[in-house]
Image (tube, rainbow, N blue to C red; front, top):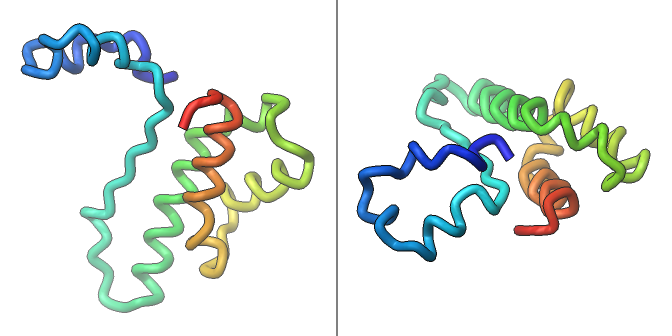
Length: 108
């Protein structure tokens, strides 16, 4: 996990004073999305930009393709989501990625 050993991200914050939260840090897969820069003039462009953001997240998680948690069909789907996501794919793409991460890490 990318931030597993990054205690410095929370040092100095009130949450870091609680031992139970320090023990949880880095134990769960986290995905982060920002749609702040999606300021397109029409629906088609907004849809395109959101799909770009989702495709980038799939690219960041491409390590999943090297694991044995996905079937060949799932790997084919994953590769399509990371390179050529259709508008109809976007609504379930985040759910699928979350499911793949759950299978890989064994944690939601």
